Image 1 (cartoon, helix red, strand yellow):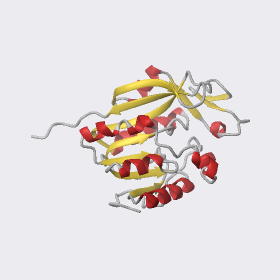
Image 2 (cartoon, helix red, strand yellow):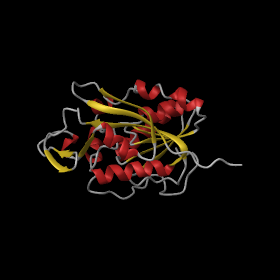
Image 3 (cartoon, helix red, strand yellow):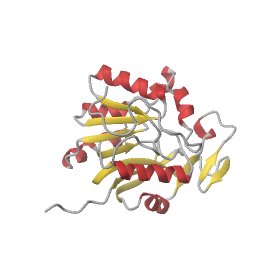
Length: 240
């Protein structure tokens, strides 16, 4: 289901993979099971609550970055936005395509890495990165943030979760880079690098974008603290 092919990597083509962004290997296996997909099938209320702001801002083009099995991509498409979605897991893209077809909506799907997005500059009004971009070392995370900035139009919005240093996983395992930990004995995605940050680091990481809202909250499991952030990219020069 491709709506409006953009320049960049053709649909269905895998773009470059770096050693520091490997967690999709674990999630590709999770998405292969019904139980694994079930845990990620419900739209997050925080994401759903942003639709009003997007409509107020007259957003039209949206990207679900690291879309998983498509819960948010399908929701955004059903909400009337032109939606694109990308994930490094072929299984994720396969199930997102099936979910979009079942819902009767169009989602432009790509297989690709989040720190090398296959889209042109300034293409989107809004980017969602839910539980995604902290899977990597600081270099990979910075590269992903730069890519988000690149593909957003001036004054665009992006909504992102990041691992907080209050999260119970912070400090567990081997520190492979600043604020980045790997647990070689883990039976989940913690065998891959996870980056944690504090509030000051979060703001610095996302400059020159300005935070519209930031709060630190637990997800479903005790101690699973994540930053929930909404950022706005700098506006371009006014046109006369």
